[in-house]
Image 1 (cartoon, rainbow, N blue to C red):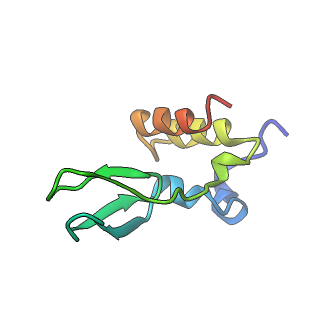
Image 2 (cartoon, helix red, strand yellow; image 1 turned 120 degrees about the vertical axis):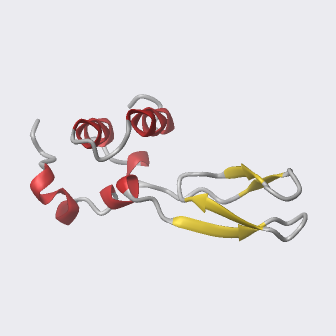
Length: 98
């Protein structure tokens, strides 16, 4: 099972991998000034570009929160150049070094 996640079929077998490579944008309005703020789906807080206040958004659960192969998946995506080293580090922090 060491080679469970092979890239050739990962998109078909893993429903969460696409959001790791191409995160969706979620738009929320700043509750303080009404400015539209664009969050990537993995972001939960941002500073409003208009008023400077911190705006929070409900977290979106990803496969990284429950998958036993999350770290291997991140390493595979990084080694194939599908995500940057900094994005891989950010994802590893979100799983607490699983």
